[in-house]
Each structure stands twice: as C-alpha cells, then as structure tokens.
Amino acid sequence: MLEKFEKTGAEALEALKKVTNAEQLEEYRIKWLGRKGEITQMLSRIGKLAAEQRREGGQLANKIKKDVTAAFEKLREELGKRETKTEPLIDVTLPGEPVRMGRSHIITQTLSELLEIFGRMGFNIAYGPEAEDEWHNFIALNIPPEHPARDPIDNFYIDDSTLLRSQTSTIQIRVMEKTPPPIRVVAPGRVYRPDTVDATHMFMFHQLEALVVDEDVTMVDLKTTINQFIHAFYGPDMKWRFRPSFFPFTEPSCEVDLLWVDKNGNEEWMEVAGCGMVDPNVFDAVGIDSEKYTGWAWGFGIERLAMLKYGIGDIRLFYENDLRFLEQF
Image (tube, rainbow, N blue to C red; front, side):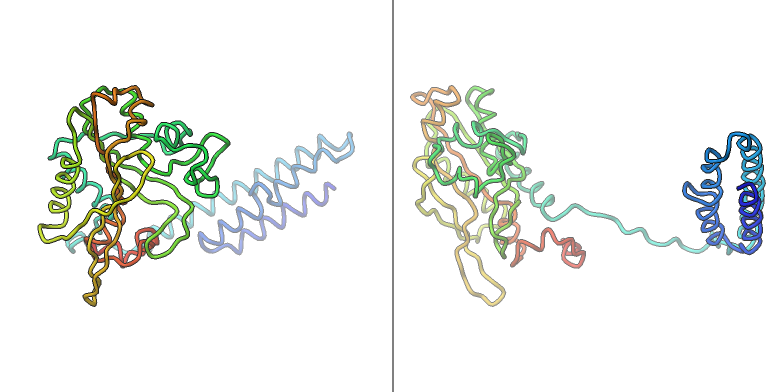
C-alpha cells in the first residue's frame, strides 16, 4: 500500500509537468486534488492500513499531498503571471460599449397605467394573498357549495380548504371586513384557473377589480365609471357595450365587451370584464348594513385589455419571454 502511495505521488507530479494553461490546471486540480481526486482518495485509504503501518502511511500520504499541492500552487502562480503579461491592452480613449437598458414587462406597464387612471378617479389600491381559503374565495362571495365554480376540476386546490385564488374579488372581501364604508378601492393581482390554454385563455392571468360602497350608489355610477375608464385608456373612439349576465356576488350583473378590430378590419366583440351591483348577501357576510349601503364591483383581465390596446392576437406571447415581442413595448 505504501508503494501505491509513492506511485500516486510520482504520477501526480509527472502529470503536473504537462499542464500548460489555466484550463488544464483546473482539470488537473479536479482529477488529483478535488474532493474525489486521486490524492484525496489516497488519504482516505490510510484507515485501511494495518495498525503498525498507519503512522508511517499517514506521514507519507500527508507529505505527498503537501508536495503536490505546493507544486500545483507554484504552477498556478506562474500561469497567472504569464496570462497577465499577454492580456490585450485596453484603449480607454475609445467610446464604451452601449449598455442595453431593461424595461418593464408589458403587463407591468399596462397595470401601472391602469392604477394611474384609477388613482386620478380617487381609488385606493389593496392587495391580498394568492393562496386563499374558501371563505374569501367562495362563501363570502355568495357562491354556495353546489355552484360549479367551486368544483375542484375548475380550481387549483392546495388542500381541502385552501386554493390558489380564482379571482381578486377575495381582496374586496378582505377590504370590506376591515374597512367601514365609504369604500373606493381597486385590487390588482394574479389569479389562477385551470383553463385550456389557447389564444385568449391562460391558467394564470392578471385581474384588476374595482369596488365602490357607499350610500345611494347605483348602476349609473358603475356605467359612468366604466365609460370614463375605457375612454381614458383607449381613447374616445373605443366602442363598448353592457351585456346582461349572472354572477353570484352581484345583482344585477353585466358583462363588458369591447369592439375588437383585427389587422384585416374584421370586427368582433371581446369580453373583458364582469360587473354589477354588489349582492346584499355579500354585504351581510362581511358585516355591512345592506339596507343602508349599496355598491358596485367590476373585475377585468389585464391581459385582454393590453391585447385590445396593442393589437396582440395571442395571450401566450406575454409569457413566452421572446424578446422580439417584449422589446416592442
């Protein structure tokens, strides 16, 4: 065994003579001095020697490691000096290379613009957790257990009572639980639904919901706010419409459609939001007097608003990280 130690040391020193650059030196270090290298393995074999040989074997192995390490460090210093001498000079009088500046993602840009518009209209901003309990995601929103929206197939459940929120209406519930009217707030954030991915659907997307609660709030206030927002975001020529619908947490309820015009001039109505007057059952669930207060709520998809504004035909482009697309905005 001691002869094998001496042979390993000799081979290591001989191999070091063939190293001529930094890349080869690193390969040498890994092979001989690394955690699984030949020298390290040699040291691990000391315990397998007979008791009377261990002292001598340990001294020999440590001497070999010391000699190889010293030779390795000396060569590394020499190669470092050699490479320093051959480095090209830098002409500091030449203009520097331009630095490519980053920019906000198109979704972030759109959200910032939306929040700025609603800020001018007097709305505060509220945030909430993305992992929610059933109370905030369903029960307080007047969605009963038998409602199809609560089907596990249509939600990302974490456990029996916790799921990734399917709407930012959960933030509205949290605000109403803690804040007495009057309330005027928007709630942005990511939401999750196991939708089949296509040009207009994703399993994760962004919503911005608006909530107003006060005395004598009517559907007229809702329609006026939507009209002002759409014209502020898209310009005065954007056409939109109300379409009757149903949501458990609003009554009456409507869908908001915007007129989509593709590059060929074809027109099509695209749904971007759901809205309506807050159902009294929701007020009762959060402790707000439904006889005294009324309110409206509105929730829309940020991706769809951006698609309509910038003529983007496929929602998947937002998340493919293709710089050819992202650098246009």
